[in-house]
Image (cartoon, rainbow, N blue to C red):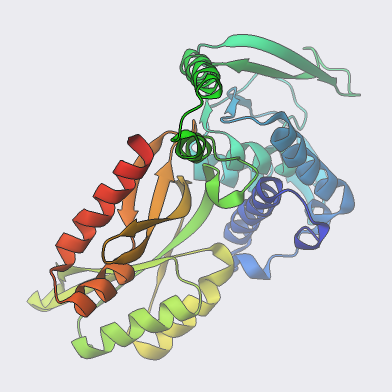
Length: 357
């Protein structure tokens, strides 16, 4: 439903990540794989509206980072699809554990954080605790219908940090300076400005956090030639990364620790490869969080031909890393019979020349 809704890329990515986070937590609570989870009331229309609506709102507000206060535990019990459950319900506690959320008790025996709310904040929040130093721009207030001993209000504060304000001021000055210039280099200046101000509406250009699963297993009785085939098979079924580490195992046997990083929905496929293609008898799971830099691909022209370059950016759009694509460099190195590292150096030099002259 979410993928078919034609949402803005960042709102879609966030919404899917929140439901993925829920699936991982519910799966851990029930002892099943995330893709086998049936959401019950969590997947009902109101939860979809809550999650997608929140992500649409945050995307519309064009926020860079989200901070959340410490969360109350609540207390008592609540009726759910599985019967009466203690508060916090198991899924909420698991979500707290996955993100190491700071919690506290205010003595109120009610459900104060639902699984839907916990999934949203544990997926999207950059940090929990006190708010960062910022210049407050706007506030939003939402009141609940329950009468509680404390104000039943959710507050949204929107502000700018000093670093963002300085960046915007610098960009405004630069735009004014560029606009006032009329030289033969004007197209290049516009190109430079567009590179720095990539729109966050493109999903691949937006810094975000999501959930990921790490699968681990030790192997000491497998032909090393099979490991390469296992790598290829894992990537084919959707693994994000695969790597090995040399370890010493029982009976003084040398072995490898094989680690697979994959989305929650690909766990079953990756496990099938590991069980079929290796001699392992068991696989460990751990749900983890990862922060992902925004990135975009650009093409630079060199005297040997065009090379694609990957440009990684921070939340504020600052360029943090520039890397020419390996295959492009290798193809040119083989064709012209020159060192790969020389092609790599030329590509980097060309990118910096085109964007910082």
